[in-house]
Length: 546
Image (cartoon, rainbow, N blue to C red; front, top):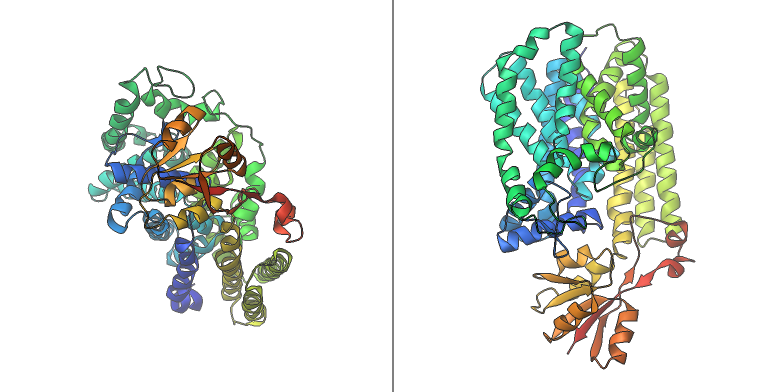
C-alpha cells in the first residue's frame, strides 16, 4: 500500500526535517569534546601536520584521525570557524539519510524507506549530533553505507561495490577503531548462520573486501607509527614505550570493553536502554513496539534482514556490556532503529492499527511542549515570549490538525514534536547556555588581533583555544608561565586568583574581560534558575599583559 503522505508529502517533510537541523551549524562549538576535536583539527590545518595529533601541547592518542582530517580540509576551504568544523559531518549525515533510504528500500520497500528517512532525520540525538559534533555523524554514515554496498556485493552486483564497502569500512575504522568490524560484520554472520549459507564464509569477495579495507586504513597506521611507534621515548598515558598501533588495534576499543586499557570507565547494563528512550524521541514508543513486533508477530522474517537486525543487536549488547558508556554512542544504530520503527508503523498502518500510537504521539507532543514552555519560564531566557508563541502555535497545529490517514497524523505529530524541540533548543536553550562558555566569550575580543595568547589554570578552555587567532599556549606550571610572560605584550585567559597572584608579584595586568563561566554540559537546577544562578557561576579573566 502506498500512502499519500509518502507519495505527496515525503519531499517536503524531508526538507523540513533537514532544515530543522541547520540552525545548529551556526551555533558555537560546545565544550568539552566538540571544542577539543575542533582544536585538534585547527592545529592540523594551520601547521599542515596531518600525522601528529596534539592536545594542550601534548601527544594525543585517544581517537583516530579521520574526523580531524575532514574538519581540517573544511578549514582549508572555509577558514577556521565553528561552521567549517560542523559542515563535513553534516554532509556525512545527509549521505547517511540516503544510505538509510536505499538500505530500507532494498530490504523492505519504498514506503518503508521513505518513512525510515523521515524518522531518522529528526530523531533527537541524531540532530544534536549535528550541533555538538563528535565522531558519530561520520561513523553512522560509514557503517550504514558499508552495509548497503555489502548487500550489493552479496547480490553479485558491480565489483565497484566491493571497493566502496571497503572504503566506508576503512573510514569507519579510522573514525572510531577496529571494533566497527563487529558492528558491520555481526549482522552478516548472524544472517549466514540463520540462512545456512556457510559457503559465504569461503566467498573470495569478502576476503577481497577485508584486504582492501586494510589497504585503505594504511594512512592511519602510518600516522600512528610515525608519531608513536618510531618514538618510544615519548610519554603517553604517563609512561614511555607506548605503541600507537597496539592502542589502535586493541586498547582504544577492546581495552575499553574489557576495561583493561589506559582509559577506563564504569557502566550499567541498562544505561543504553533508558538512554535510547529519550535519545530516539519523538519515536521511542514506535521503536519499542517495533522491536516487540519483530520478536513476536512478524511473519515476514526474511533472513537477509538480519544484516541490520543483527548489527543493531550485536552493537547494542556490546555497548551495554562495556564499562565505558556515553549517550552519543547509541547514535550509530539509529538508521537501524529508524528502519525497524518504520517497518512496524507501515505494517500497522496496513491493518489500521495505529490509533493508540497516534494518541501516544500526541501525548509526547504535549509533554515536549509543556517541558519547553516550563524551561523558558524557569530559566528566564530572553525572547522567551516570542518562542512561547511559536511553540503554542506548533502545538495547536500538531494537536488539532487532522488528516484522513492515521500514519499521516502520527508522522505529522512527530514532526510537530521535533519542531518544538529544535525551535526551543537551537533558538533559545543552547544560545542561552553558550553565553556561559567563557572561553568563547573571551576569544571574541581577540578577533582580528595578533597577540600571543595562553591559558593557565583554566580547565575546559578548548573553546578559547579554538576561537582565539593562531596557536594558544596551554601553560601547565609556573615556570612556563614566567617564560610566556616574557613575550610581552600578550594575553592570558585565566582565573581571578591567578590575576591576584600576578598583581602581587608586580606584573602589570589589565583585565580586558570578565566572562561568566559554567560547565554547561553538566546542568544543575541552581544554574538554570535566575535566582540561584550567580551562586553557581564562576568568573574567568582575559588579561592583557603590557
